[in-house]
Image (cartoon, rainbow, N blue to C red; front, side):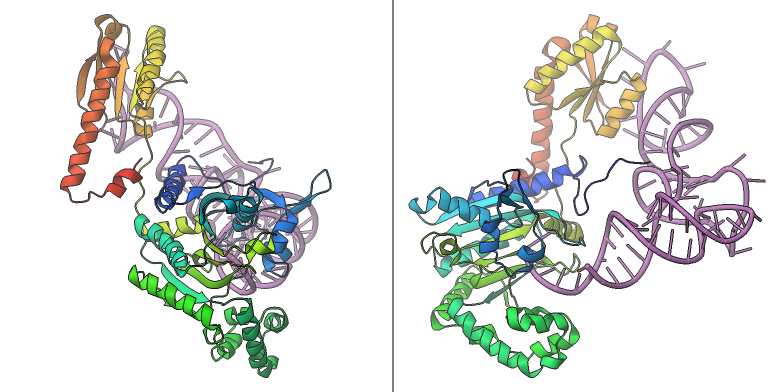
Length: 447
RNA sequence: GUGGAUAUAGCUCAGUUGGUUAGAGCGCCAGGUUGUGGCCCUGGAGGUCGUCGGUUCAAAACCGAUUAUCCACCCCA
């Protein structure tokens, strides 16, 4: 088939048979964030380019080679957001949210855009869930945000993801650490790979992250950030750990976590998987105590995280995490003849008024074909009716699971069917309670 | 941007050392006696074999280029 065009490289369609999964994930995330006191913020997909170059950082890969930047017809340089924090921070400042009681806790679901070569867990258009907590430097906030991330995974039933934390200190600590690193790597300079040689000047911390065998061997003995952070930063980090211990959240200290965005300070963390390919960071975040000032505001210590929804979904698939089933048709009406067909369309409307998912044939198929169709749709009930039934007023609804039929009068069809659906639902609820699987979260998740 | 693998029907894939009209399973549509699904049976639709060029009497197959997809590097969520 010669298609005119296909979806753009690195983009994905969510098809009707799968959309319930992402709907479930998104509503669950927002629900949990709300539970933690975060409110949704929505910001535009595009911003002035300078917002990102300033906050994410001029020298980062994201800004240097991955942004979708263009001039609009008025000659303004515009960029599709490569991440969510900058926009939220801009809105926080622009609308004076710093005058509201602090901290301001916001969350969002957004699409993000980065011009990269696609691979497993990496797309050019991808989706993030993120939270930001503006206006607190307390380690308690760090722990709360991390615990929110942790809560998400446990709530969804994901087990094989581990939390790694680190502190990269404040800007003073980092200056000292960079120097220490530089002088350390200078010694093995001739053995480093070309990219790391470049990093040595620009950002020596990145060398720690290099996967080339030689570089990682050299960096094994390299100075560790935690030995170079000042006493304030060190205290802060220790307290974060204490809070996490108090909440019984397991973590591993990974001194090699180096976030690639310039705004991070002090606490940084990642929730990592080994099951979804090379891009294993499902959730990443940290503190950015200097960002708000960088954007022209007053000093406002803050922090947040972002989670890759496609990666989250990959992980859920890898672990076979159960997801509530897609809503299916509750009753499929099968009219015979024109008169019945007209009755069907108004009857369906009345059922829908009651919140019942009702459908009927709109292509003119035979009764048999309609039954097949209803079956494939997963309809719970069908009802076939023509002249005879309309005259007698008795309609026979058929339970598609067991084939049993029940007669319902036409004049109170909607009310009776509604009652049947309620009975069925309470039956399922009792069954769930008796089976010991009852958890309020399952019920909520099923909505 | 660099590297590796792959490209045949809507999906998953066969297709011998180049040789008639390119196949299967699943899915889709229609039948299997008046108006009842799932199982089974029958039939049908659907492919310029990713694209362009080359070798050859002959190419889905061999060669070259190009594009796309997947995976990895880089970097991030």
